Length: 372
Image (cartoon, rainbow, N blue to C red; front, side, top):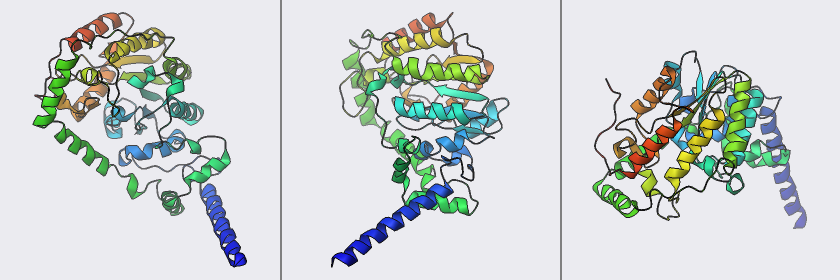
Protein backbone atom coordinates (compact mmCIF):
# COMPACT_ATOMS: atom_id res chain seq x y z
CA UNK A 1 0.00 0.00 0.00
CA UNK A 2 2.77 2.40 0.87
CA UNK A 3 4.82 1.90 -2.31
CA UNK A 4 2.06 2.84 -4.79
CA UNK A 5 1.20 5.84 -2.63
CA UNK A 6 4.84 6.93 -2.45
CA UNK A 7 5.21 6.42 -6.19
CA UNK A 8 2.17 8.61 -6.80
CA UNK A 9 3.51 11.36 -4.56
CA UNK A 10 6.94 11.27 -6.22
CA UNK A 11 5.34 11.28 -9.67
CA UNK A 12 3.18 14.28 -8.85
CA UNK A 13 6.15 16.17 -7.38
CA UNK A 14 8.31 15.36 -10.41
CA UNK A 15 5.55 16.49 -12.77
CA UNK A 16 5.15 19.75 -10.86
CA UNK A 17 8.87 20.48 -10.88
CA UNK A 18 9.08 19.57 -14.54
CA UNK A 19 6.23 21.97 -15.32
CA UNK A 20 7.83 24.69 -13.20
CA UNK A 21 11.17 24.32 -15.01
CA UNK A 22 9.44 24.41 -18.38
CA UNK A 23 7.56 27.60 -17.48
CA UNK A 24 10.77 29.18 -16.17
CA UNK A 25 12.52 28.32 -19.43
CA UNK A 26 9.69 29.86 -21.48
CA UNK A 27 9.65 32.88 -19.13
CA UNK A 28 6.22 34.28 -20.08
CA UNK A 29 6.53 37.30 -17.77
CA UNK A 30 10.00 38.31 -19.06
CA UNK A 31 11.50 38.18 -15.56
CA UNK A 32 14.64 36.24 -16.52
CA UNK A 33 17.52 37.09 -18.84
CA UNK A 34 17.14 34.03 -21.07
CA UNK A 35 13.52 34.42 -22.12
CA UNK A 36 12.40 35.23 -25.66
CA UNK A 37 11.73 38.85 -24.71
CA UNK A 38 8.41 40.58 -24.14
CA UNK A 39 5.70 40.60 -26.80
CA UNK A 40 2.82 42.81 -25.76
CA UNK A 41 -0.45 43.76 -27.39
CA UNK A 42 -1.68 47.35 -27.32
CA UNK A 43 -1.83 48.59 -23.76
CA UNK A 44 -5.57 49.17 -24.01
CA UNK A 45 -6.19 45.45 -24.49
CA UNK A 46 -5.10 44.65 -20.93
CA UNK A 47 -7.30 44.82 -17.85
CA UNK A 48 -6.14 46.60 -14.74
CA UNK A 49 -5.98 43.20 -13.03
CA UNK A 50 -3.34 42.04 -15.50
CA UNK A 51 -0.98 45.01 -15.13
CA UNK A 52 0.94 43.76 -12.05
CA UNK A 53 2.10 40.75 -14.09
CA UNK A 54 3.43 42.96 -16.89
CA UNK A 55 5.93 45.17 -15.06
CA UNK A 56 9.05 43.43 -16.38
CA UNK A 57 7.58 43.06 -19.86
CA UNK A 58 6.67 46.74 -20.08
CA UNK A 59 10.01 47.88 -18.67
CA UNK A 60 11.92 45.69 -21.14
CA UNK A 61 9.89 46.64 -24.23
CA UNK A 62 12.27 48.93 -26.07
CA UNK A 63 9.56 50.42 -28.28
CA UNK A 64 7.42 51.76 -25.43
CA UNK A 65 8.32 55.45 -25.25
CA UNK A 66 5.69 56.76 -22.82
CA UNK A 67 4.60 55.10 -19.57
CA UNK A 68 1.82 56.13 -17.20
CA UNK A 69 2.27 54.77 -13.67
CA UNK A 70 -0.55 55.09 -11.18
CA UNK A 71 -3.37 53.47 -9.28
CA UNK A 72 -6.97 52.77 -10.18
CA UNK A 73 -7.67 56.50 -10.65
CA UNK A 74 -5.06 56.60 -13.43
CA UNK A 75 -6.34 53.57 -15.30
CA UNK A 76 -8.58 55.63 -17.60
CA UNK A 77 -5.76 57.46 -19.39
CA UNK A 78 -5.58 55.07 -22.30
CA UNK A 79 -2.61 54.31 -24.51
CA UNK A 80 -4.59 55.54 -27.49
CA UNK A 81 -5.22 58.89 -25.81
CA UNK A 82 -1.53 59.32 -25.02
CA UNK A 83 -0.46 58.34 -28.54
CA UNK A 84 -2.92 60.80 -30.10
CA UNK A 85 -2.23 63.74 -27.77
CA UNK A 86 1.33 63.64 -26.45
CA UNK A 87 3.93 64.86 -28.97
CA UNK A 88 6.62 62.33 -29.77
CA UNK A 89 4.66 59.42 -28.34
CA UNK A 90 4.47 56.47 -30.74
CA UNK A 91 3.76 53.65 -28.31
CA UNK A 92 2.41 54.30 -24.83
CA UNK A 93 1.49 51.94 -22.03
CA UNK A 94 -0.58 52.60 -18.92
CA UNK A 95 0.93 50.54 -16.09
CA UNK A 96 -1.67 51.56 -13.50
CA UNK A 97 -3.07 48.93 -11.17
CA UNK A 98 -5.44 48.85 -8.22
CA UNK A 99 -4.27 49.45 -4.66
CA UNK A 100 -0.58 50.29 -5.12
CA UNK A 101 1.50 50.28 -1.93
CA UNK A 102 5.05 51.30 -1.10
CA UNK A 103 6.64 47.82 -1.45
CA UNK A 104 5.21 47.11 -4.90
CA UNK A 105 5.81 50.67 -6.04
CA UNK A 106 9.46 50.16 -5.15
CA UNK A 107 9.49 47.11 -7.44
CA UNK A 108 7.89 49.01 -10.32
CA UNK A 109 10.25 51.95 -9.92
CA UNK A 110 13.32 49.73 -9.71
CA UNK A 111 12.46 47.77 -12.85
CA UNK A 112 11.63 50.88 -14.85
CA UNK A 113 14.92 52.51 -13.86
CA UNK A 114 16.86 49.33 -14.69
CA UNK A 115 15.28 48.50 -18.04
CA UNK A 116 12.96 51.10 -19.54
CA UNK A 117 14.00 53.29 -22.49
CA UNK A 118 10.86 55.44 -22.31
CA UNK A 119 11.49 59.15 -22.71
CA UNK A 120 8.29 60.28 -21.00
CA UNK A 121 6.63 59.27 -17.73
CA UNK A 122 3.35 60.41 -16.23
CA UNK A 123 3.35 59.54 -12.53
CA UNK A 124 0.20 59.72 -10.47
CA UNK A 125 0.63 61.07 -6.94
CA UNK A 126 -2.38 59.57 -5.17
CA UNK A 127 -3.50 60.06 -1.57
CA UNK A 128 -1.80 56.91 -0.25
CA UNK A 129 1.62 58.51 -0.61
CA UNK A 130 0.64 60.23 2.64
CA UNK A 131 0.42 56.90 4.48
CA UNK A 132 3.59 55.85 6.39
CA UNK A 133 5.40 53.31 4.28
CA UNK A 134 5.81 50.81 7.13
CA UNK A 135 2.01 50.49 7.37
CA UNK A 136 1.47 49.89 3.65
CA UNK A 137 0.83 46.28 2.71
CA UNK A 138 1.17 44.74 -0.73
CA UNK A 139 -2.17 43.77 -2.21
CA UNK A 140 -2.71 40.07 -2.85
CA UNK A 141 -3.41 41.10 -6.46
CA UNK A 142 0.23 42.14 -6.93
CA UNK A 143 2.56 39.14 -7.55
CA UNK A 144 5.56 40.57 -5.75
CA UNK A 145 7.03 37.06 -5.62
CA UNK A 146 7.79 37.35 -9.35
CA UNK A 147 10.11 40.29 -8.78
CA UNK A 148 12.26 39.32 -5.82
CA UNK A 149 15.57 37.41 -5.84
CA UNK A 150 14.18 34.28 -4.19
CA UNK A 151 13.85 31.85 -7.08
CA UNK A 152 11.57 29.39 -5.32
CA UNK A 153 9.00 32.13 -4.80
CA UNK A 154 8.40 31.98 -8.54
CA UNK A 155 6.77 28.59 -8.02
CA UNK A 156 3.72 30.48 -6.84
CA UNK A 157 3.20 31.55 -10.45
CA UNK A 158 2.66 27.98 -11.61
CA UNK A 159 -1.02 27.96 -12.50
CA UNK A 160 -3.36 27.47 -15.43
CA UNK A 161 -3.13 31.10 -16.59
CA UNK A 162 0.68 30.93 -16.70
CA UNK A 163 0.49 27.72 -18.71
CA UNK A 164 -1.84 29.40 -21.23
CA UNK A 165 0.45 32.43 -21.46
CA UNK A 166 3.44 30.17 -22.07
CA UNK A 167 1.62 28.28 -24.81
CA UNK A 168 0.74 31.59 -26.45
CA UNK A 169 4.41 32.62 -26.46
CA UNK A 170 5.47 29.27 -27.90
CA UNK A 171 3.04 29.97 -30.73
CA UNK A 172 4.69 33.38 -31.24
CA UNK A 173 1.62 35.18 -29.95
CA UNK A 174 1.64 38.20 -27.60
CA UNK A 175 1.60 37.93 -23.83
CA UNK A 176 -2.16 37.90 -23.41
CA UNK A 177 -5.04 35.61 -22.44
CA UNK A 178 -8.80 36.09 -22.65
CA UNK A 179 -9.03 36.53 -18.87
CA UNK A 180 -6.98 39.72 -19.21
CA UNK A 181 -9.43 41.47 -21.52
CA UNK A 182 -10.72 44.71 -19.96
CA UNK A 183 -14.37 44.48 -21.06
CA UNK A 184 -15.66 43.01 -17.80
CA UNK A 185 -13.94 45.69 -15.74
CA UNK A 186 -15.50 48.45 -17.83
CA UNK A 187 -18.91 46.85 -17.45
CA UNK A 188 -18.38 46.93 -13.69
CA UNK A 189 -17.51 50.63 -13.76
CA UNK A 190 -20.69 51.38 -15.68
CA UNK A 191 -22.86 49.37 -13.29
CA UNK A 192 -21.33 51.15 -10.33
CA UNK A 193 -21.86 54.51 -12.00
CA UNK A 194 -25.54 53.74 -12.54
CA UNK A 195 -26.04 52.58 -8.95
CA UNK A 196 -24.27 55.56 -7.40
CA UNK A 197 -26.33 58.01 -9.40
CA UNK A 198 -29.66 56.65 -8.32
CA UNK A 199 -31.96 58.64 -6.05
CA UNK A 200 -31.14 56.62 -2.92
CA UNK A 201 -27.40 57.11 -3.38
CA UNK A 202 -27.79 60.83 -4.03
CA UNK A 203 -29.84 61.28 -0.85
CA UNK A 204 -27.15 59.34 1.05
CA UNK A 205 -24.40 61.54 -0.40
CA UNK A 206 -26.18 64.72 0.61
CA UNK A 207 -26.34 63.37 4.15
CA UNK A 208 -22.57 62.96 4.24
CA UNK A 209 -22.10 66.64 3.47
CA UNK A 210 -24.57 67.89 6.05
CA UNK A 211 -23.13 65.63 8.76
CA UNK A 212 -19.50 66.51 8.10
CA UNK A 213 -19.49 70.25 7.43
CA UNK A 214 -18.07 70.83 10.91
CA UNK A 215 -15.14 68.42 10.43
CA UNK A 216 -14.23 68.99 6.80
CA UNK A 217 -11.51 71.50 7.73
CA UNK A 218 -9.83 69.21 10.28
CA UNK A 219 -6.19 70.36 10.50
CA UNK A 220 -3.47 68.16 9.12
CA UNK A 221 -0.78 66.74 11.38
CA UNK A 222 1.44 65.78 8.46
CA UNK A 223 4.79 67.26 7.57
CA UNK A 224 6.96 66.77 4.52
CA UNK A 225 9.30 64.66 6.64
CA UNK A 226 6.54 62.40 7.98
CA UNK A 227 5.39 61.40 4.49
CA UNK A 228 8.20 58.91 3.98
CA UNK A 229 6.43 57.02 1.20
CA UNK A 230 6.65 60.28 -0.73
CA UNK A 231 10.15 61.29 0.35
CA UNK A 232 11.67 57.81 0.02
CA UNK A 233 9.59 56.62 -2.92
CA UNK A 234 8.13 59.00 -5.47
CA UNK A 235 10.60 61.86 -5.02
CA UNK A 236 13.84 59.89 -5.60
CA UNK A 237 12.19 58.07 -8.51
CA UNK A 238 11.33 61.38 -10.17
CA UNK A 239 14.84 62.69 -9.55
CA UNK A 240 16.41 59.57 -11.04
CA UNK A 241 14.26 59.81 -14.17
CA UNK A 242 15.01 63.51 -14.54
CA UNK A 243 18.73 62.87 -14.14
CA UNK A 244 18.73 60.57 -17.15
CA UNK A 245 16.85 63.12 -19.26
CA UNK A 246 13.28 61.81 -19.21
CA UNK A 247 10.27 64.10 -19.24
CA UNK A 248 8.34 63.58 -15.99
CA UNK A 249 4.83 64.86 -15.37
CA UNK A 250 3.53 64.33 -11.84
CA UNK A 251 -0.26 64.23 -11.86
CA UNK A 252 -2.41 64.73 -8.78
CA UNK A 253 -5.71 62.87 -9.28
CA UNK A 254 -8.80 65.06 -9.56
CA UNK A 255 -10.83 63.53 -6.74
CA UNK A 256 -14.39 64.73 -6.42
CA UNK A 257 -14.89 67.45 -3.83
CA UNK A 258 -17.51 65.18 -2.30
CA UNK A 259 -14.81 62.61 -1.47
CA UNK A 260 -13.46 64.78 1.32
CA UNK A 261 -16.85 64.58 3.06
CA UNK A 262 -17.29 60.90 2.27
CA UNK A 263 -14.00 60.00 4.00
CA UNK A 264 -14.79 61.99 7.13
CA UNK A 265 -16.76 59.14 8.66
CA UNK A 266 -15.38 55.87 10.02
CA UNK A 267 -16.19 53.02 7.67
CA UNK A 268 -14.15 49.84 7.29
CA UNK A 269 -15.16 49.62 3.63
CA UNK A 270 -13.34 52.79 2.64
CA UNK A 271 -10.71 55.37 3.50
CA UNK A 272 -11.60 57.12 6.77
CA UNK A 273 -9.67 60.34 7.24
CA UNK A 274 -11.43 63.54 8.41
CA UNK A 275 -8.26 65.53 7.72
CA UNK A 276 -7.95 64.27 4.12
CA UNK A 277 -8.51 67.69 2.55
CA UNK A 278 -5.77 69.43 4.50
CA UNK A 279 -3.53 66.37 4.34
CA UNK A 280 -3.64 66.44 0.54
CA UNK A 281 -2.94 70.16 0.51
CA UNK A 282 0.16 69.54 2.62
CA UNK A 283 1.23 66.81 0.21
CA UNK A 284 0.78 69.16 -2.74
CA UNK A 285 2.93 71.76 -0.98
CA UNK A 286 5.65 69.21 -0.27
CA UNK A 287 5.68 67.82 -3.81
CA UNK A 288 5.98 71.25 -5.35
CA UNK A 289 8.68 72.53 -3.02
CA UNK A 290 10.67 69.32 -3.51
CA UNK A 291 10.34 68.76 -7.25
CA UNK A 292 9.44 72.05 -8.95
CA UNK A 293 12.46 73.36 -10.81
CA UNK A 294 14.03 70.00 -11.65
CA UNK A 295 14.82 69.80 -15.38
CA UNK A 296 12.00 68.18 -17.31
CA UNK A 297 9.74 67.82 -14.26
CA UNK A 298 6.29 69.40 -13.95
CA UNK A 299 3.41 68.96 -11.49
CA UNK A 300 -0.25 69.21 -12.51
CA UNK A 301 -3.54 69.42 -10.61
CA UNK A 302 -7.05 69.77 -12.05
CA UNK A 303 -9.27 70.15 -8.98
CA UNK A 304 -10.01 73.75 -9.98
CA UNK A 305 -11.49 73.03 -13.42
CA UNK A 306 -15.02 74.50 -13.24
CA UNK A 307 -17.71 71.82 -13.21
CA UNK A 308 -15.33 68.86 -12.97
CA UNK A 309 -14.45 67.88 -9.39
CA UNK A 310 -17.49 69.77 -8.13
CA UNK A 311 -20.00 67.57 -9.99
CA UNK A 312 -20.42 63.91 -9.07
CA UNK A 313 -21.89 63.26 -12.52
CA UNK A 314 -18.26 62.92 -13.64
CA UNK A 315 -17.44 60.08 -11.21
CA UNK A 316 -18.39 56.43 -10.79
CA UNK A 317 -17.55 56.75 -7.11
CA UNK A 318 -16.22 59.65 -5.02
CA UNK A 319 -12.58 59.01 -5.92
CA UNK A 320 -12.69 57.83 -9.53
CA UNK A 321 -13.14 60.20 -12.45
CA UNK A 322 -15.30 58.57 -15.12
CA UNK A 323 -15.27 60.93 -18.07
CA UNK A 324 -13.04 60.20 -21.11
CA UNK A 325 -13.32 63.77 -22.32
CA UNK A 326 -11.90 64.98 -19.01
CA UNK A 327 -9.04 62.47 -19.29
CA UNK A 328 -8.25 63.80 -22.75
CA UNK A 329 -8.42 67.37 -21.45
CA UNK A 330 -5.89 66.55 -18.74
CA UNK A 331 -3.43 65.21 -21.33
CA UNK A 332 -4.06 68.18 -23.64
CA UNK A 333 -3.45 70.57 -20.75
CA UNK A 334 -0.17 68.83 -19.97
CA UNK A 335 0.89 69.45 -23.56
CA UNK A 336 -0.19 73.10 -23.30
CA UNK A 337 1.56 73.46 -19.91
CA UNK A 338 -1.71 74.48 -18.23
CA UNK A 339 -2.93 73.72 -14.69
CA UNK A 340 0.62 73.45 -13.38
CA UNK A 341 1.44 73.69 -9.72
CA UNK A 342 4.58 75.72 -9.10
CA UNK A 343 6.30 77.30 -6.15
CA UNK A 344 4.82 80.62 -7.25
CA UNK A 345 1.20 79.48 -7.24
CA UNK A 346 0.82 76.45 -4.99
CA UNK A 347 -0.17 78.31 -1.83
CA UNK A 348 -2.83 80.35 -3.65
CA UNK A 349 -4.11 77.23 -5.45
CA UNK A 350 -4.25 75.34 -2.16
CA UNK A 351 -6.15 78.14 -0.45
CA UNK A 352 -8.66 78.29 -3.29
CA UNK A 353 -9.20 74.52 -3.28
CA UNK A 354 -9.64 74.47 0.51
CA UNK A 355 -12.30 77.17 0.31
CA UNK A 356 -14.07 75.45 -2.60
CA UNK A 357 -14.35 72.19 -0.70
CA UNK A 358 -15.41 73.82 2.59
CA UNK A 359 -18.20 75.73 0.81
CA UNK A 360 -19.25 72.78 -1.37
CA UNK A 361 -22.87 71.71 -1.69
CA UNK A 362 -23.59 68.38 -3.33
CA UNK A 363 -23.96 68.60 -7.11
CA UNK A 364 -24.90 65.81 -9.51
CA UNK A 365 -26.12 67.62 -12.59
CA UNK A 366 -23.97 67.67 -15.67
CA UNK A 367 -21.25 65.61 -17.34
CA UNK A 368 -18.28 67.92 -17.86
CA UNK A 369 -17.32 68.82 -21.44
CA UNK A 370 -14.27 70.65 -22.76
CA UNK A 371 -14.98 74.42 -22.86
CA UNK A 372 -15.40 75.79 -26.40
